[in-house]
Amino acid sequence: MNLTYLILILAATVGGGMIPMLFKRIHPSLPIYLLAFTGAFLFGITIMHLLPEVYHELGHSAGIYVVLGFFLQVFLQQLSHGMEHGHTHLPGTGHHHVAVFPLLFGLSIHAFMEGIPLGFHYDDKSALPSLMLGVMAHKVPEALTLITVMMHAHQSRAQLWRILVIFSLVTPLSAILAAQLGQEFHIVTHSLVYLVALVVGAFLHISTTIFYESGTKHHELSRKKVLAIAVGLGLAFVTLIFE
Image (cartoon, rainbow, N blue to C red):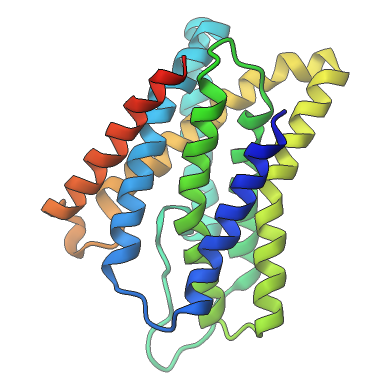
């Protein structure tokens, strides 16, 4: 377990959440292109590093768990309302109610799942640093969206910081828990690869949804969005040099 990786992920999450608190006006295009870039990067990391690993460990049965993870994420987004891929779903004018707990609960489960692969031992030495970069990048728009919604729900400044700090800790603590239990218990070590396969399915759902739904009108692929996706995929290919 590389604690530096977890500190970087923690810092990226806090930094993303601070953006709406520090800047009253954020250009509407910033979250769209940031999500497109990070979604493409996470997609590339998942396909090039995580997917080969789980198929190497589980064989053809890996596909079952990847599909289950995909639809598990479909269920989770019913709670989080898609905040993990940039949906804010803010109430309209004259309606200020935001169901805070289901949003936090759904997004926290997703954040916990993100940490599990970080505690897994990979045969591919490039997998862990690449995954760290993918998760770190994804955390910025994820935390930005969370705090934007919480601000709209009229949470106090102190409450916003509590939410952000607690949310920022979920993924690192999940990674530490997975690594420690994996070292102590053989059954956990054996089970982790199945959990990683589930998370691969969730990552595939999130990243591909971002391609088509991250905030653009009628979900079209504009030139700038395509460019952001291309840059994200290009950087994912660059991570192959870690091998």
